[in-house]
Image (cartoon, rainbow, N blue to C red; front, side, top):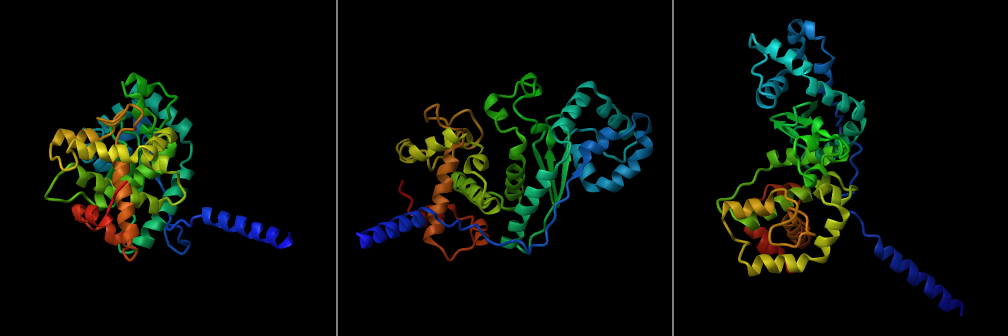
Length: 336
């Protein structure tokens, strides 16, 4: 009886240990010399005295430099900081009634950005671990009149903080922004959205054959990259899916794939078809309404996982630099 009891305990312990699968992205990055300090252009601008804007422009240029030009010309479209009319445009922007209301909501939601600094610091530590020769950008926040969520330059990563105020603000309804988009306009999405935008400029889509499955695998690589940068973050947050939508994908992996095969869509080069499947949407075209938009990206992510599991010798760097999407598909031997 005693021996059986011991065997039973050993069996239970064995089963429990089998359930605890090691996270392959759980690597030690404590020694990575990275510290993100977010520069808050949004706060600096609206703290300016409207009557002293002209005198403050040189300090604004000195503090925000290249990003100020990018922001002024490409985000809020008020021209170069060096133009004579620039102070008047800045004054108009910061004294606009709606923009000031938005700023009040921004400061209510983001009195500090400590959590952004902490999460991006950790993410970029992983980034430097896997890509030691690549630079870490300067990080900014801005209020862009709801124009952009994330803006990326050569050494700049900037977050449109007014696009992440949460689902309880009325600005988004007033602007006619769809509910499926609003669901991801929350503070918690900032770190993963920022790293995703950075990855998509560091590792751009590049293939002479522009078809749906290539886009699926490319975006699957980006999601795999996010797994490495955020090894302890929920998949639903990284994908921008609800937990129910993610569960739907898991339960319907084979039907989704079979549908794409049966409809001969995988190798479609039709621009509209690719956009319908890859771009955000309330649900994925051709799939049930319970599906999330961009569900095929989840399939692309699965293909990439299959490929990397079959090639354990490959590094994340080698994967991200591999633009041979058809090769990845073939060598993954993906069969849901």
